[in-house]
Length: 464
Image 1: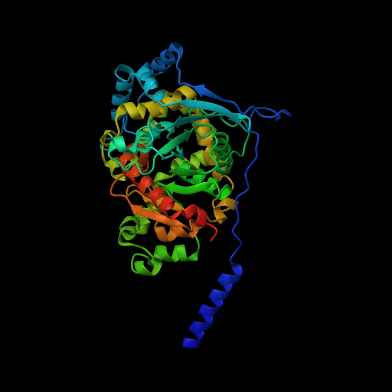
Image 2: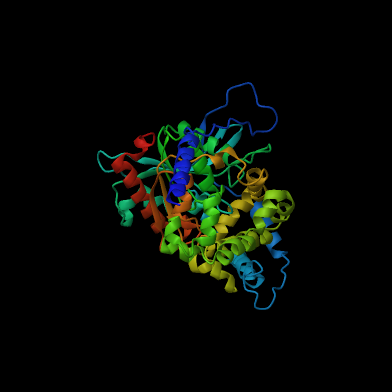
């Protein structure tokens, strides 16, 4: 019996050594996403200032639509289980019409420098904030931060000062950042692609070009939601330029036999699969916390991955519908237990000014349809079919695992994809929209992660 065990183990070791592939990078995706044919002339690389502006006509049209909104009465005691509860939605609309000051929020949006530049045929919008002060002999570290859906660049407004001026906010100033927050093409004030097949690799290629255009040959990247995938792809495209990758969501799309086995047995034999007690608490029972939760909360993704324009037409035409659609995600993805509250718990972690500012970015830019199309472009070929899903990430990686994220990915799973995890922390509180909900916690985790990478110069050891 012992001989057979050694033979099996020997065979597995030989198979592993022979099948280990040479480290690959993801090809840079050179595209043309502008209207019509790509011109023969060189693309203008000018970077110009941008400010958010809204006309009185746009605001008058918005308020007219809100005045004429039709509400559907909710089921008794349904809270947020059927989606956004219209009793609470009436309160939101009332606040939107009578108390929300969009012009004041425009000033808030414009307090940080914003710019645009044309890359691969479309205008790319980004916020670029430099430190107000630097200690003598210290330089700022460029940090690309990428949002997701249904968020926007505004998600980072509370964390930016913590990263560009940490000492003024009670944080260590050993590392100070120069923060670049672009809008994903088709989101906010970045122009939407005019052609099909613009996916996460396309976005990563554009943001790589953006960082090089800004003069950053080496930089850090951070993201959650779609920002997780875009920054992951960026690290795969340019591993020698991305010094470190920090994520507040890390999903694994290629599930192997061991993953499946850990789902079945991990609750009973956690150590065998590298699970910690917190992993077990967050994941099991898996039928309830994994499969059922995913089925219950992913209907939007199926719609957006198949027919985004159909439902998007209604959302683009109705501010009430747009608010209901987006607010539901800010409720459920912040804490699933908020479904049991009539107000969705929305004002427990956010305020209406912040929530409506994010919604207004979608409304005034008219980007809801193009933002939803990003799901179709990324998912229409099937999960696990893309090259980037098969490639690992060699770049030093830090993961902040927030307890109320819709799906939990244990480090044991993540390290199959991210082979150089130098920091993995179970965060004490918070959900999906971490930068907006818990900016201090996220900033602290980014700072400690970068501290590890810099102290040990880990990015220089990727190939070792």
